Length: 474
Image 1: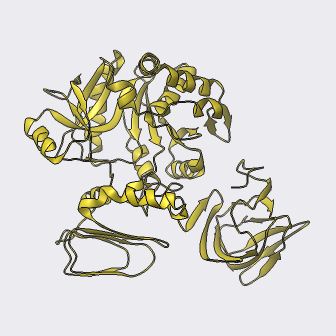
Image 2 (image 1 turned 30 degrees about the horizontal axis):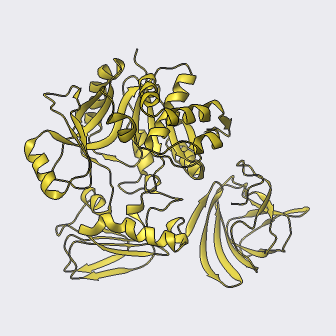
C-alpha cells in the first residue's frame, strides 16, 4: 500500500500582503479567505485523501511554533512540527522532511504543499494527487501545473504536453515572463503555472538532492542526525542547518533532473501572492469592490478595502487597495500590488518594528496589545487565555502596574500568591519576581502600565516557563 506523507511548508513571510502579513505573524497564519487560517485550510484539504495516515508534517519557523501548534490543535489535525532555525528556502525544508521520513523507516511519498495557497475544488486536487502517485512510486519527481486562466506575469511556468490527467515529462521550467510572453504561452496551450506543489518518494528526492546539491544534502543530513525533540517539536541541529545553502526545489533539483514530470491541476488555485490576487478570490459586490470592516464608499469600482480598527471612507476610487491595521495603513494601485515588497524593504532598512510585529502580539499564553508608547512609559492590554500561565520572571529596568479589567487573575509577587478581580490592582517593582496565571474558565484582561528607563521586550529574566523558554529573554 502506498503511504503518502503530506508535508506543509509554513516558513514564508508573505511580505506582499503587508501590513496584514508580517514576519512574526505571516499570511499563512491569517484567515484571509474564510473563517479558518490558510494553514488550517491546507491541513483540512487532506481530509478523506486516499493513502494518508491522517498525520502530516509541518515545517515552520521556530518563532511561529506555538501559533502553528495551536492552530492545528484547534482543528484536530495531527502533525509532526519541524522547526527551521532560519529560512533556507524550499529545497532544504523538504530535505528535512525526507530525511526524517527515511529515519523513521518510511520511504513515504511526500506530498509537498505550501501553507498559503487557495484551492477551491478539493476533489479535483485530491484526484490530481492520485494521478501523480503512480509516477512518484517509480521514482519520478512530480510537479503540479496549474491550468492557466489567463496571462499572468507573477508566476513561473512549466512547459509540458499532457493529453489527459496522467503525469507527462516536463519539457522546461520558465521564469516569470513579461505580459507579451505570457500571452504567447496561453495561446500556445503548452504552458502551465508553476504551483510550487510536488509529489515524490523521500528516497528519490534525497538521491537527487545529493547528486545536484551535495553540500545542501550533507548539511541537512547533519542537522537531522543532530536533532533534538522536546515539547512535541523537532529541532534540527542549529549549527549544521545554518551552514546549509539556500535554494528552491525548482533551482536545486527540478530544473536539473531528467525525472521531472507534471500533472495538470484545474482546481481554482491561487497562491494569494498579492492584494490583487486576494481581491480576485474574495467576494465582490456589483461594482467589483471587496469591503471588509467599518468601511463606507461612494462611486468606487474595483477597490479592495480592509479596515481592522477604525472607520475608513473612500470616494471616487478605482482599482485601488486600502488596508488599515491598528498601526499602519497601505494605499496601493492594484497594478502595483506586487511592489508592496519594495515598501517593506524600505521599512526593514529603517528598522521599523511594523515589518515584524503587529500591534497585537500573540504569545503561547494569549496576547498583548501596545496601546501607548512614549519616553519612560508604555501601556499594554494583556489577554491571558483560560488555563494559561506566563513565565515566572523579573525585570532589571522597568516597574509594572497591573489593573484587572475583566476576569480574575492569579498573581505571584515574590513569596506571595493572590487573586485579583475586576478593578483591583498590584504594583510590581523593579526586580520583583512575578507572574500572572489564569486558572479559570474565562479570559482575563489586564491593563499594564510600564515605567522605566528601558522598556524593550528583552528586559526579561525567565526563571520558570511552561513553554520551554527558560533562560530566554524574547
